[in-house]
Length: 101
Image (tube, rainbow, N blue to C red):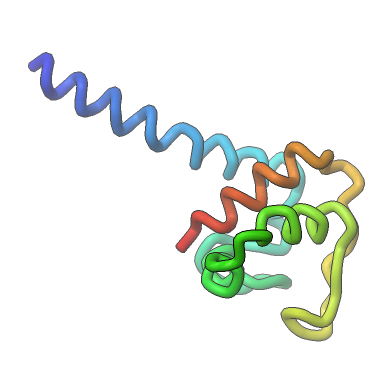
């Protein structure tokens, strides 16, 4: 019984950061245009992770795009700037997106 409780505690601990960052994405309205596994207005987070996952500078680059917006990388529809997202949250979101492989 104790072993089962330890396993459940470990699983919960590992899942908590991923869920917390998804909650952050929802709270910053990212999920209005993006989804984890399918294209909406913008690319899926899995596609972003696939494209930028091997780039060591990706967290900083994606954080800048989250805050300032961007265009031309994923098609004709530009990503608007998100002034409600501070740099720390943008980096947390970018890191979470890059883990959606």
